[in-house]
Image 1 (cartoon, rainbow, N blue to C red):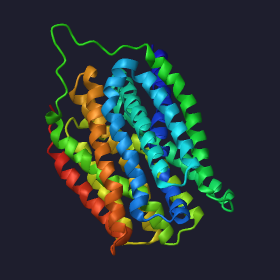
Image 2 (tube, rainbow, N blue to C red; image 1 turned 90 degrees about the horizontal axis):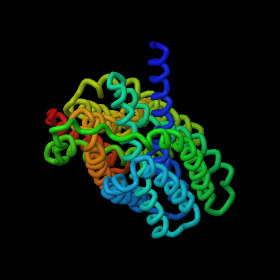
Image 3 (tube, helix red, strand yellow; image 1 turned 180 degrees about the vertical axis):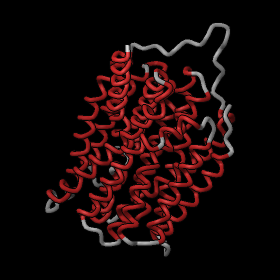
Image 4 (cartoon, rainbow, N blue to C red; image 1 turned 45 degrees about the vertical axis):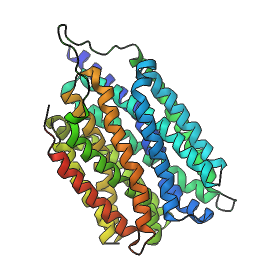
Length: 398
């Protein structure tokens, strides 16, 4: 009996790890790898920081559109099918970004990639929540493993992009080759997603007990948590968009940037175990509040000091916290809603997350174009995160 139980637990862990490729595609690569490409594209194409930030704003707008239509698509297709469709489309749109140099088609490619990545991230989160339901005692770990896949995407980007940029340095628009390399990584990760998607495709959501009807998801029930999460969307994305540009300004070498970004990604992967207990214990907004506050400290460090050791500390702490903020909202939904309402709940949090990300890059980019530079932009981001921590702390369990 014990052997059978251990085998079942191992199978759940394997499915969670395979599902984590969805987070790797949707955030780790499709969203965050742009930070590595921003400096060479900005230098080559003569962009301002505002236009450079607008590329991630377009991606976030697409993410918002994708989040809004995901519940309807999931009801029609199911989470497993939507996961795979979104992953293949995200790979295609990533490749498309290597074929253009004008801002308008690049903005369109980033927007479409955002739509597809929202489908992947939300449907993958729903499948991960269903896995967590099968073993409540380890739910925080299983959810953390899924969201920690973002770190795998960040590490893959850190290892792939700098060598490709170095190889293509003498070519016109050599950064295009990095987009194509990232598209290939997305396609390979999508192949891994097929196994867990097929495994869950035939599983039905647990029915509501007879005599009870699932209530509708009400945004006002989660008002403080949603507001705090929106602040997270505004605050964190400025760091991920511009921190590599800040390192370049400070004279960091290509090898140093690779080390920084890879350590950040590894910290994301390890965060699933660090915060699992916190996600299991808090049924209200306590986890979201604590993680937002910690993230604000990590973002403030490079704004007040330029010492390389502090930059590494900032990257590791940021990586060890920011995806657990996302996992905390899925845990909040899972703790407080019946399974039939999980897609609506996760989609609502993803919607405010996307709305915040629309504001963040343009806000920080606009500040960075002024006399305060990127340091002031990051300081503002930290303040927004601390506001989000205060708001989330008011969220009570339903």
